[in-house]
Image (cartoon, rainbow over all chains, first blue to last red; front, side):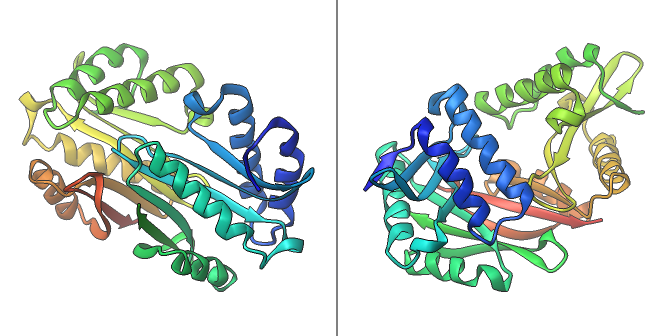
Length: 156
Length: 156
């Protein structure tokens, strides 16, 4: 079931990010920083909404979204990750659907997911396409030489 | 002449933003926030590089750029504005050239300028095109309904 993340989820969130297999150390550290801001300042001040799917005490996956500054109603899906041991159970789909619902309820119009154009991210890109996202924009060699940015957009 | 911005430039930077004529209050406040971070934390911690063109004590324009997290060598041009009373004197061109030079010197590969697709920003878009930027990506209705995001990219 999907819940708003609480402090006790932090260790498992960081652990899932580290074990996900697609994030480099800078990205793992970035999730930890956003999580720290979420705990320290709360959503109204930091803008990062963390949700988890939990089964008993076990966190199966998490997502983090928040409003984009200077826009009316654009939200970013900053992170979404599912425990590699529990993939293909629909956890990612439920986390993304819940994020979209939360964005919609806060008056958001658009959810944006930025990801990489490289082969290791092919299943991620297919996931967004299957969830109704369109690859509306791309910037070549963005993350690094040969690693394009792909901007997936869903109008809610 | 172009200088690294110092504390005394702050009042004029905020004044230029307010009088520029294209920025709304949220955008004016955003410049002020970035400026405050620049003074409080310094460039290494906040990532915002402010430069000004100054003639005597008078600030004619300013620009602010910084590295994009999670990329290797992408920098954002967060803000560029010229005093409306001194436009067409090449201030914008010199500020942007100096920003590109600073990005290049810090090892940056790409400078990105995000702007609006609306008519009031037509001269801004032409400015980037004349400076060698390409409109590589766009997201419809981004800032608000009818106000598209246009992402200008220059490879340095």
